[in-house]
Length: 258
Image (tube, rainbow, N blue to C red; front, side):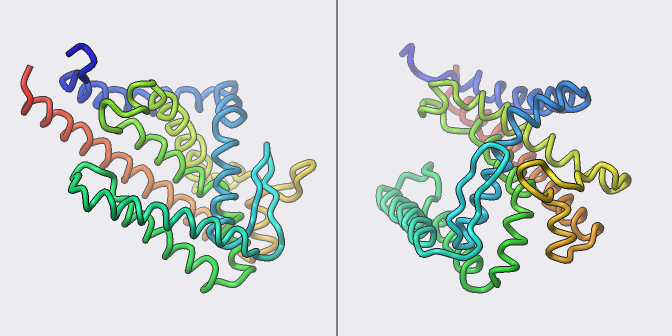
């Protein structure tokens, strides 16, 4: 049928599109104008979402807006209940998918349980002060994780909405640009501390690195090491997911034949 996905084309797209997206992101980042465009139009939103998502899983009802995330000083029940409801939805969805014996379904139940464990740690184990430090770190840190997650959407099953509508191409471009742009700052900071955006942002206050050092007592070395470690983990997982996705798509294409 004409609407059947072309599996022989799919594995080739996976093999070429992901490295190409990262190469283009690196080229843009190397240009002052390209770097400005990346930071302004692509990286900023995942950065603020990183703050907000970290806050939600720590029990704070944060609201992300352009260039700033509004974060209350104290935890609130609304954020805790809303996140718990989201986790419960994933667990139930995963349970029902397992009962249908759909082996190709995303393991929503285990993802929901993992998120639940993170929420328990963020709301019950760490103090409010440590939670605020994590939320501050979660700007660039969360952007890296979100960037990697957006790259993963390119590997959705052929025939799904993300695949047929072409949205996965846009998510791939945004994800690669976010991961490259955010991690490059901290990789450069290992040898050049001037790359760290210390200082104060007009209308916002202290930058995230300044907050981590001045308000929460982090050292520059530990801050840089933590960001670089997270960046490395994101790149390694993205590379492993890409290799697996290409291999599995090619195996499926070979099994189904021309």
